[in-house]
Image 1: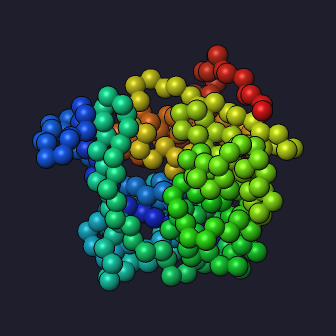
Image 2: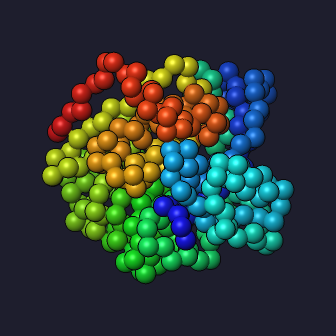
Image 3: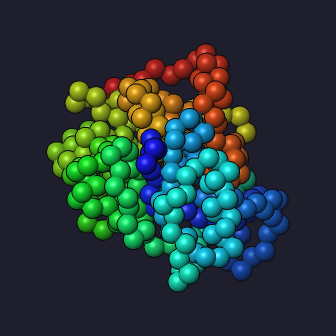
Amino acid sequence: MGLDLLCVGAANLDVVVSVDRAPRPDERVVAREIVHAGGGPAATAAVAAARLGVSVGFCGRVGADAEGDLILDSLTSEGVDIAHVTRDREVPSGASVIIVDRTEAGRQICARTAPPPERIPDVEGWLHVDQVGYEALTREHRRNSLISFDHGNPVPSLDLNGIDLYVPSRPMVSTLWPGDLGAAVQDMRSQGADRVVVTDGAAGAWHSVDGRLHQTPGHRVPGPLSTLGAGDVFHGALVAGVIQGRPLAEAVERANACAALACQGLDGRSAIPTGPQLDEFLGRLSDQTPTTTT
């Protein structure tokens, strides 16, 4: 295929509304800003990886509609290959309406997701899947490809066999493995996951090295507007770092920084840094918090 990475799953057209506070039921509030932007976990991860210099494609299903045209334009404009996208006249494209609270930088999301692709092409390198792409994985993919799995949303019948980079969110871990995080990570690995990174929001991320759990704290950035898409950006930057041959700890550190910088945009993509911008940001950090171990 000639690609370093194929991201598989959801691609959406986001309508993002910025308000001073989220409306209560039956209340009208003034929108400070309304923007249209590309979204979706796998698609946004693809954009993040592309900006960091990885050759990346997207595989998914979009409708044969105006939203689909905009979704694909948002990917090709970033250099993401769309040769494995299916245009389906029978389904509408994925779309989301997102309310961003300017005071809290949090968000409320109403989403419509297109079905998973009918088939993922055979890939000898890396596949990155979200909850939609996970449904299309086969035993052959697990055996023949390197798979990164963004597990921030529920999936039916979780199977970690053949997952080379498993990245669940902390709330997902708490649901599936209540109790001690270190014991949970060990269980994930015993179930088949090779490397495990747990995202923990503003607190950063956790990863296991030689049986010990390490926390890499998150970064504060000036004037964050929204956390929309930050997790998706983290996933794209993380797998990009692994593809580029960086040690896992370094890949996690760079993914943390990339996600933090992305929060300076209202939508989930406009503030994703390029590789040189990320290097400059990391170079300017003079007071880094040491990595802690538990």
